[in-house]
Image: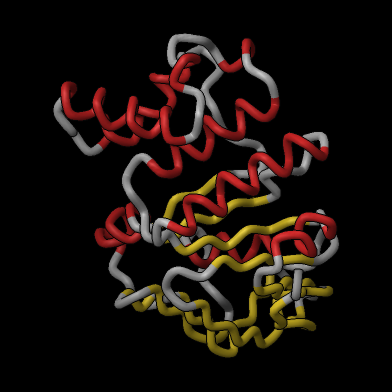
Length: 223
């Protein structure tokens, strides 16, 4: 569960990124976060992974009180939350396998176990055959699948996807959204930020709308 209560975020003097956000997302939900650039979507993501702290309000992620979470507990929180970043953050000098295995190496998973886990995740997102290629050799849709695989590698309860279809054509965008939907059907809570109104309408999931830092919509769209 994700719960934001009366959350506001200010940056410096005079810039309010979020105003009084009240939002609850239940385990297993698929929620679209929509709104124009600068509406606060990415700020909400950064708050959820505790990259930022709110100026006011409270944030609860499952049993974690984000505001009062000790620094040493932050890595444990982030294991629960996979993130597909808008700029992907893939390492260009490493193969697809090396990019995806990195989080497992950081937590000292044994190489044999890590190899098996990476292969399973790459297969689940449909790019196992590209494991030994470098990012420059893959298409935009394939790179998104790599980023999703890396986000899933620690078996998170929550997946945050920040504009995962932003630079893709319509057919490839729909393939990525169908992949995220399949991941959601297996129990992972998904919060996806997007500008793509066609995909939002087609999938028929809950929509949270933001505008200039304020929550202006919370509805279930009908297919």
